[in-house]
Image (cartoon, rainbow, N blue to C red):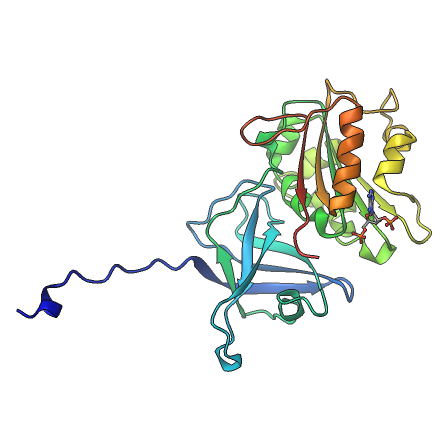
Length: 276
Ligand code: A2P
């Protein structure tokens, strides 16, 4: 026997990513789009988590490694497909190309979803406020379509803050389609409030979350008494720009809410919207 023949077979290196197929793509504006990919049978996640997404390297361009970015999964944990809501950055290494994907294309999907915007990281309460700016709405697409949100909270309030009206993606979902969802339609009708706000052009509601919280309008609009958060009953999740998270978290803390994590659930949890 030669040395080569007797050597143990080289260990088969497990691929770090799943290779999945694009099922659909929807362009909302020249800056925003959504898409869905197939879900591998072994891929498990909790509603609200994020995962790495990428494109296979283009060998014709001499690329060796894929470009990957973290994306919140917009589908609830039991969904058959995995949906994502993305910004288009013209010279962004990933999104400049990702925005061109079409049905049937290949997408790389990380194997380790994770994150803090999950129901398990907030303590029980009465009201769950989900604050998202821009593509920071993505995790609420997941959490608000999960029946657990409605069994744990009496009210679920999806707050979406954008600059322009056209950026209110998923308005039809939260004003119509979710009420026909076979799994959460009845609960959503009774317990879900969609609270969109626009900052840079006229709309039925205007202003940043931070201002709407501080001037009490958020609470009067929702018919919540007291004009501020109640640490006994109110829980919140924040996703969006770093500035929005920092400013909103400071207000929540000033009103007596404590930040939580997976290890130690609290009154609110935060995560930056990743690509942008
Ligand atoms: P504004 O138009 O007043 O800046 P962006 O596209 O920059 O991520 O912003 C999305 C939304 O988040 C906009 O409505 C923007 O309001 C709002 N926003 C930006 N920074 C903050 C902040 N520090 N606190 C609250 N809202 C913010």
